[in-house]
Image (cartoon, rainbow over all chains, first blue to last red):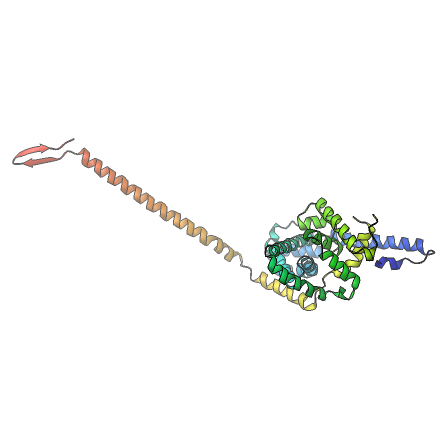
Length: 222
Length: 102
């Protein structure tokens, strides 16, 4: 049962509820796109100042994006300690190469791409040393899941397990789409995949998730 | 891809986003700040670049100088042998002069 289903009332309220639901969806979508497309003048000023050698102005960018950056990293590596290190590395790398950053562009997509690449590199590195990964990361993963506020939520726990059971790139793409609420184009830019490949990964992930969560969301009726 | 199942899943998966804890959000900016402050300034960067470049140039100059000296010496040696060969030598024995020309 989704959260928005609760908005829907009885049959008499149905037209209003559907309208309300539509309005809510449009509003939520507007908020999402607005935050993505609007250029923050403070951010642009901070970037310009950092480019001119004022390292202190970088604090604004760090405080604005750090939570999302850590969340993205954590979603890929599933380890709080590694996620923190990756976020740190991403911000330092962005600072070192800020001279190449195009003026007028939002900082978010750029730092998200950097942290995603770093996190994917770490995952690849772990795969190369699979034995180490099997002992360490799984334990770390379980421990980190306990840190999630959703641990009390059985539904969220089931979804988390289902996403984690997916093959690596499907898992990463699905998590960025379902948990972090990024759109296809944004995920493509972050992961270096084409938008078509992102859609393909999501489609495969969708089928597997639907099958795995059929008791919660109903069977396979396309 | 924006079907009902995925939309519902998107809503229900929202609590899975990593929220971290206060200590992390205090520690992380401090760590980043420390790393950035420890970045080498322009002078250090230039010094880091110039040192190996200078060393390479010095080595190349030394090799070039030694090569020139060696070539000059070889040329001088060749010239002196030629000079000996081309010059006639006169030897006087008992009042008779013998010429050892080519």
